[in-house]
Image (cartoon, rainbow, N blue to C red):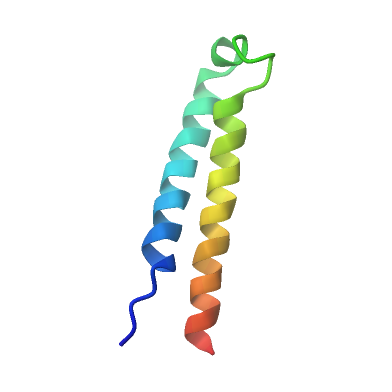
Length: 65
């Protein structure tokens, strides 16, 4: 049985991205005022979550073939 590093990394990025996106969504206007009116925590949380999901899907796809 082979160990695929994409499973734990995908889970880690998805979890951290979801936490950061939730935090960015809850902070709202207070956190966005310091960064040119862009909620950086929300956007980077979404980017991390999408990357984590893509990594998990890649691991799932390679497992099936």
